[in-house]
Length: 348
Image (cartoon, rainbow, N blue to C red; front, side, top):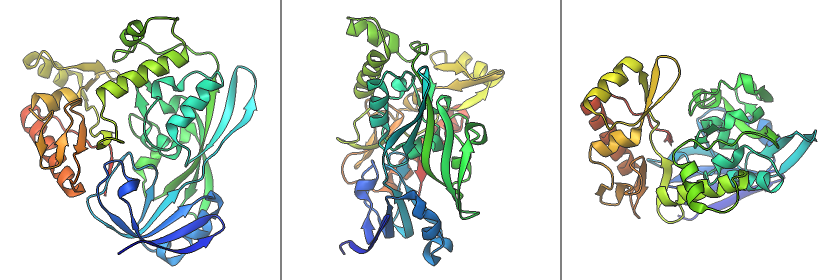
């Protein structure tokens, strides 16, 4: 059955029996009964008042880079595709910048660097849309997006109104936010950032300084750091354009310092970092590799040989097969190390 566009209205398009394979970076096959592509977020109150959206679960799609579809979606999916970047205020030292939810994240990073802003360079080449960034509180190489978020605009399904949440109200935490904790409540429509022109570079994480040294040449500035990060990501992580994946599939687990000390006593190679008073963050990649999963392939479902945190679709894996592998990894790590691994992507 082919998909059919059954309605096109100002601000949105409705598609029946919509294929979702190209809308998730695992590229697993799936369909939605209805897909509504929204180009104007102002239409959301009207759309969510419709019976099909008001009475049932709704799957909100971004770039699909933080999503694993294990089945077809028997209802309505909504995709915000509106894009745009607008400077609201600029005092010379920093600027307040509004970005629509459908804007590509990496394009925003490049836009900020081209205009002399500093801070987003460590987050270069993260796949996905700007609207997904605060939901996951995306982070990489020692930087998290919450450091730059001033406010988030969203549609609140419980009230049927568009709302604005200050950064303090977003409950940001490690790979977490109020939007992730209440996934059926908010639909992020735009993000407002405070982007500085002067800021200390973050270089002491996961080989950034070493990569800059290997690159040689001019002293490090934000564009050079972005280049180093892109080189690191390209070398260490498989490209979703070449092989289906959703980046890091598991969070680095955070446990009590006493338990971490006991684990390191029997596993001296275990990588770990301080995570606040009394807590330690463990390397999920190390735990998975120690259990022998790195490079494993079962049919077309597998674990990347480049990085143990990345599950990959070698061609024709289903979402259910990838999720079964992920659950086996969780069970094995739990049995061997008594540590729980939590999946980063949304599992449907």
